[in-house]
Length: 512
Image (cartoon, rainbow, N blue to C red):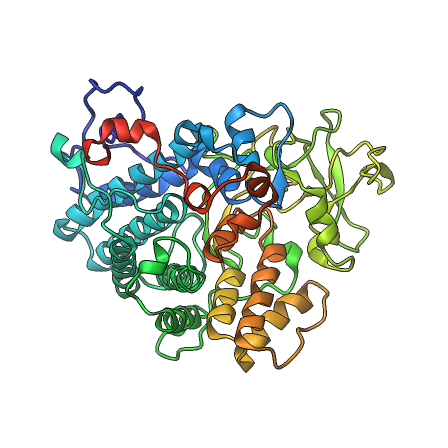
């Protein structure tokens, strides 16, 4: 995804490009002198805002922040100090941790690029339908990035407009969580009004269903976090049941339950392997899929995500069995950075296809004969059973089309189920997901709390290795149950949110 760059570097040092020098002034402000003249300019502007999500440090941080601190994955012994710190909850490192610094920085770069589109697009002389689409996407991206920031860092600086002057870099923190959520909710509603629903999903872009999906996730997150007395959320003025109702309403729109918002583009895949087929980028599950393709010229345009999950196996081409068929697909081996926790692997039901189909413990030769395997006693040549959600059989060296899933349909269906509670429709959703995985249906007639607990548990297995688990744990107020958090003796005030990076505090007088 190669885009023409018409901008100066965006507030580079403001967002962390520079060293932590208190005397250093931000430079490289946004310039709009020769931009937004043509339809191509407008398209390049929104592509530029999306492009931030594919930066290497950002895309890898999705897993380091979303799964590494949980029971899902661990890392290798010689991983970087910063990544081991996230894995073991060594909080003394967190305010300078490079993964957290980069995630914070790139989120604000994306916000600033979205703000530039929001400011300039209304006056651009292009077709109105395109103008609406690009403006809607910008509102979505601003909300999406504030959602990512607030879930990880709590109260964060609020940039309502594009940073064009030095004074605008010193944005104050949101006064409370309501301020952040008011902006995100308003942005998503504007995006819903402006965006169409694509007849075929577009890789790396979003549409009206994406705006509705994000809004459903935003409402569910706040509802469950307030219900579970998570700091900052418990003080929100919004009422818990109302937010659950709003989450169910907007998730229902994605699912086609509201006849005023029909859509037939998105839905369940019946075959779980098809969800993760890199050639199925326009698949029904892919509401918002990161844009990466093996034909790209540099990493970020293409992906090495698969290398992070796969172990090293003699530097060879490996062959993986396709479900319970006699078909085998090839892959490269990897670096073993994201390693499956064995206790988590063992917690799956033995007949769960999300284990037997999507986690690999045996590698084959091209002819289907067994090559090497993982063994629980450590005697096997595979060091750990690994996720195969990110496999590209048509890899080109290290270049693949494996893409992080930012929002997929099953996620929103489960948002609906959790928010709605044990209704007939919610049971239907959760039972389809379990049955697709080869499991039986949930017990009937569960209470609201018991049903939501089952949905919470099911999400752990459904979205494993997709950078989602930590956010479920956060909004349910259960970080204190994580083994490493217990071992470290951390208090609620220490573990609830990551600290804002020290480099950002040094650069923003409002944060000191």
